[in-house]
Image (cartoon, rainbow, N blue to C red; front, side, top):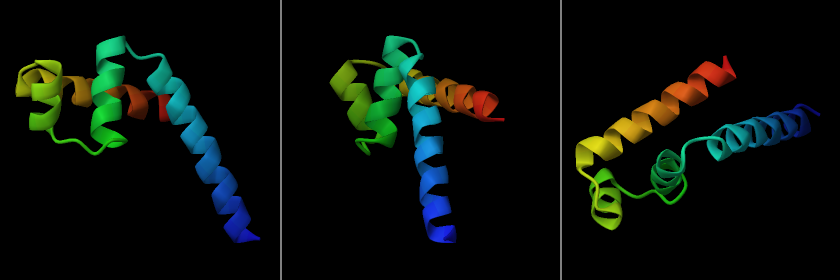
Length: 72
């Protein structure tokens, strides 16, 4: 069924994303996980990791660029 096809496609995409995230530099990976999976704000991440908000934004930007580049 198209529903199970969609589920398989979702799981495959999730696996690809996980593989890309696993290869990121440690700090970028940590920031990305906190942002996308733990749904923390830039300010929360900034405080918890003692980074400037701009640094947090840059890590997220670089992570998303890497994901887009690898997924395309």
